[in-house]
Length: 462
Image (cartoon, rainbow, N blue to C red; front, top):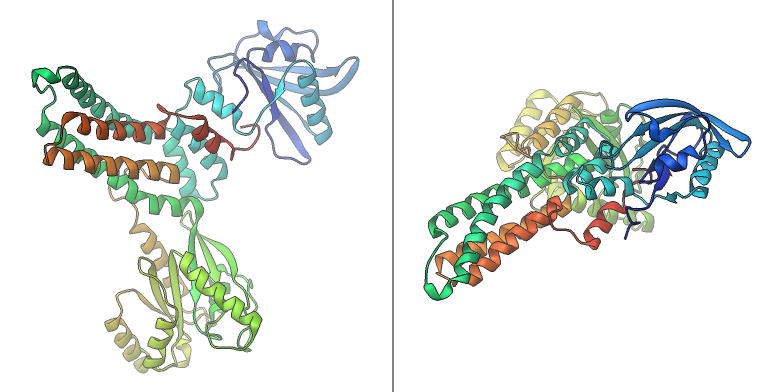
């Protein structure tokens, strides 16, 4: 899948384009020797690790650039190999020229994620920490950054390692029983095994539940604003974003397609989607927009149903039903245009609505910017209610969630087997499955397919 670790790889580690500085990484057994061929008057192999050296880069007699070379001798480097980072001027020509020089003298072009793969292969990172590197690079909010940092520290790995070690102990006892099957002896206490597997299953189930929250933090929480035409959806979007993002008009059907932008609330990204108004129409284009509205409702984690405060309660209930939101979603009813009603009439209407609904009801005026902050507060409460209450590990990776689900299902088979007094060999098989699935998460058990799927999405140079 990747190049052999005996090779020396190089790549530009900074984004493409012009810049003040650019960085080229070279890593592998010949890193120092290759770099010695493009500089003069200094032998990098004789320099101390973790030092920086000013050098001129040469292509034969021609000076290409002046650069700083940071040297890291293995195993005390990111990859665990001899590594040099060349910091030069950020001209695309200079960067490409230096890379070509390195390749000319024996280096190979690095593939996406190959530096981090080598760090994993050399024991500098486990697989969850390697994946956290990619998450950290892509983090677009404080919450996503903090979660990635926590996983890079290895907290998730330590929790899994403890679970797996306990299972391995029981598995070894059961395997011993199989060797002495004719003796009819038990080395593994069945009650202890049952208690241990029950405890592991509960911990794994908690980690699985954290994925909904973790995935939302990582990718942003989709929030769909839905309702009939001219109810104020675009006005609400503009009020939340504090900018004129969407066109506002008294003409029904102005919004023909979904308009999306992000809102950062306390370090968590909410993807606010203004949708086409739901109504019966003969307009083909508008009907396409309405279809996309229902598609966005299906994909949204939170649905803001926007209704007009001046409508009769029966009409509002009809509008709520017309959104056809699916179960399992968080729904917030937003009663807009409260500036058009007397307070006493509004209060009675809100009280009647609240009695029939199980989700929050917020009254506001998007046009007059009244009570907009209540939506922000409610969105925070909704997402914070999903956060683990004990500051435990948060799962953000679907690969981890799937492996944990497989672990949980295997644990249930173990418990069922113990309860029905299944033979030892069948119970042992399910315990092995639990150990296997936990091992695939951290990398104790890997295949080229697993590694290929993980590292193909990394940027070149990392």
